[in-house]
Image (cartoon, rainbow, N blue to C red):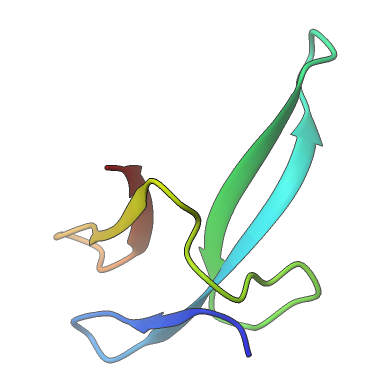
Length: 65
């Protein structure tokens, strides 16, 4: 079961994570929320992060604690 959060507008978002390669060749883990549960969905929130919500749009975001 993927980690999900419901925002203040009642919409449910699922947390996803992906390893990307930057232009310099360095690899970096990115996290994002999507309305559908996809193959790269995460089961739990990563260590050292907390969930916040954009007050204007209601989109959930991860922020380092």
